[in-house]
Length: 121
Image (cartoon, rainbow, N blue to C red; front, side):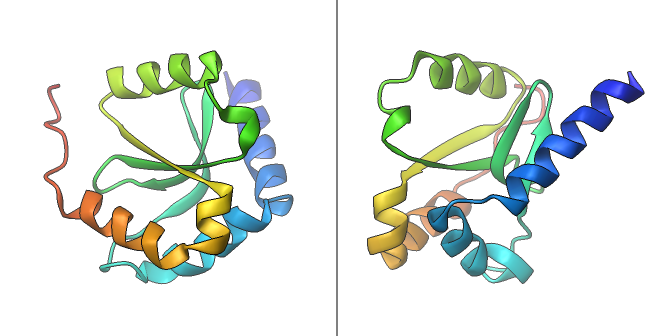
């Protein structure tokens, strides 16, 4: 089991080092509790997946997607698994993050203001 966790940790570190421009731009606006005081972490392993950003307190996952994710069956399976494990998932397009970061942050702030999912769900 330790080997599996080590692999996930190494993968997450690699993803952090090689983040996309959109991921870096959003991270600069989320880090250090910059959005409504909520703490986010990036490239966090959860089960078999690694998510772009996670607010642990609210079990909220934020994904930043490029065009390769349009109508991705893999993303649908992944989102279903995450929701089954009591996470909320929101997705933003790279283009929106890069060209309308304020709009993305407003949308994210609205999601943060919603009540988190019940732990027994």
